[in-house]
Length: 282
Image (cartoon, rainbow, N blue to C red; front, side, top):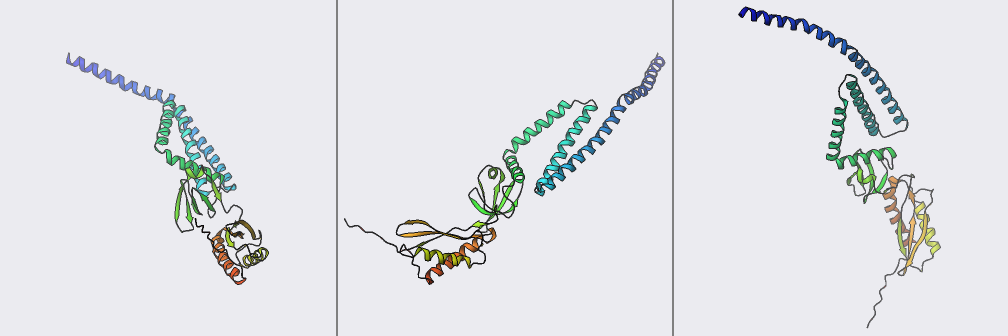
């Protein structure tokens, strides 16, 4: 009886041993074409992706986009296309791609919710790098800050103010608010206001002011300086004196011309306003 049982067990093992090669053979027949096709699909797909990425990089270079934006866009396109390629290959092998798609969408929603503010700054940075409302070196006024752009990043923009303060402006708020670019046209108008007594010869005042401005080496010849009466009130004439200069010389021209005008007015006998006070006794 015991020998009969051993014989039956041996027969089962032998049957399994014989059946395993058949299963391996069937598996190879079924999946070899799929695996070969997936490998070819991956090779061809990778070649196409590299060609597309190379074309995008060439277009960005020709249009002089910011180097950081070029790197980001090229990397983003390559990653997205590679993920789509891998999902397609999984589908070719018989995998359920619905699960992959749901996983990617869920991960995207979770990341977007966790990084809401950061993604807003990121999106704003990309938009500004594409549309270029300003460049590094431009003087801008935005979000109550005026200064020169020293660095334009994807998440924030760095501005150096006239007080030599470094200010970091988040790109999300920066891209959705008003930006004044003082360097877009290559020159800036310097606004100087000075008050004189109404009794002065206005034509003489204008001539002295223009001559003083034109003597400064950093004041541009074109557009030419302007001197006009801004307001006549409170017992005085307020002059709007407006020379032009390049952006880098703004403060030099502002302070130097103000001091030169004060000295010229004193030398030419141009009187300043006389403060008056009316006292009424009741």
